[in-house]
Image (tube, rainbow, N blue to C red; front, top):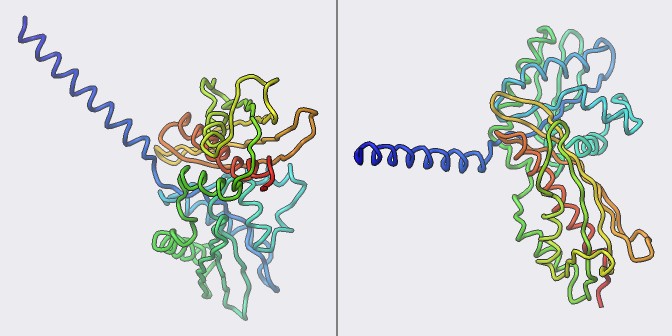
Length: 312
């Protein structure tokens, strides 16, 4: 009997160790860049409707790339509708980057197609929405648009695999964000804060306030006193956030989160207000949602907290 109990204990130990290792691997999170593909600009004659066709075919080809998480076209159209925009007006790089930030994309793929006699040229641009860095890739030939687009997709995949770091901003930790806020605040007197940020994950119940906790933690670490008593606060920070499932690519799940925060004085006058949309990926939908809301909250804390007081 004792031998059986000992064996069961050893087996239980292996199970626990396996669960811990799985959790550690999951927390590290997969690497996948949220990417939006926009219709290519059509320049000159003989390429009518090809810009849209190239975007659709690139979507199909790049979906196979495990390093990319492609934003569904329906989500792009929904964002454009909400912003009263249309894709035909998004020909400039600045507007493409702005759209990318709205939908939480780290990378935007767009470009131009044109013809010279019988030869078709497709110039692709891979743009980092946070760095504005650009990688270029072009193809040309007399082949059909489908074969040229396949070559372009292969070239874009290779370029991203080789130079993705050029498109992405330097990884910033919470420690970096706190240091930057402290630098902006200097020795200014910090008001006492009351922070209330509600959040929900569409389709699932959420139990812990990730965005609120993140904002409170950063506020405290930058010298603000945070109170649980609203009437005791000098400044009231209110916010509302949500996260929702954006798609699945194999075992990788993408979630998009949007967070809006405003700070008011005791009279109800708005001192600062801003919003942020962030996309994140993980093996768990809930973890991806929490991470996205935390990232959005940290980004907004860096914008809002320095506005709550003036340097002496």
